Image (cartoon, rainbow, N blue to C red; front, side, top):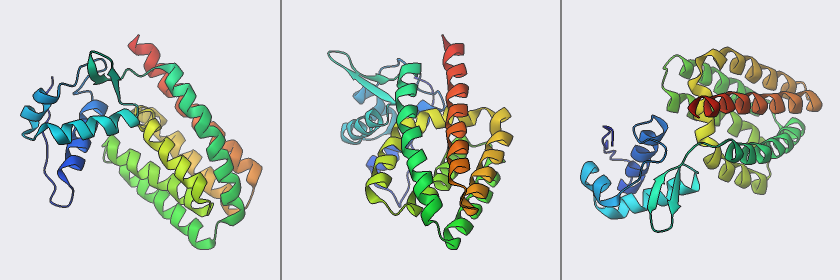
Length: 223
């Protein structure tokens, strides 16, 4: 087990701190695909009881970062093309609908907020911190989702977001794609602001397809 440690946060419950610590360890490769997550060992390493470790593992399983295998226990999940394809197919359909509705319903204030989140996303790229970049990217898309004013759709997209977080991070690790991401965000804003529904949906689909292609290359290289 590679080196990582828990950083206490007075504003977060211990279970959330442990969850974020293990999540970061997986996304940064400190915990490798296929590596077993032993509750006792992790509890000793992080200086906590087994309860928050167990709760964190359950949440990581929901995100697709961990698998629990009968008679073997929990281990870090491999990134597979099939899993990615399943998630991104659903994402493409839901985001196309969200884009269509947002195009009809976004206010001027929503557009301004989207532009601000895009600026924050570009600033985050300079940090080279992939988790900060991923969070800024999430916040950009969240403005679009919220503008749909459809709580059921927002809920579905939020649930899906957890499952695709790992793919988002793998995509964002590739700095060669950052200029393309900025260009796509700018186009999304342009077509939402001018209410060009079909164009906005086209860009969103391309945005997701590009992510799939980048992650597919990562999976192929790891074989």
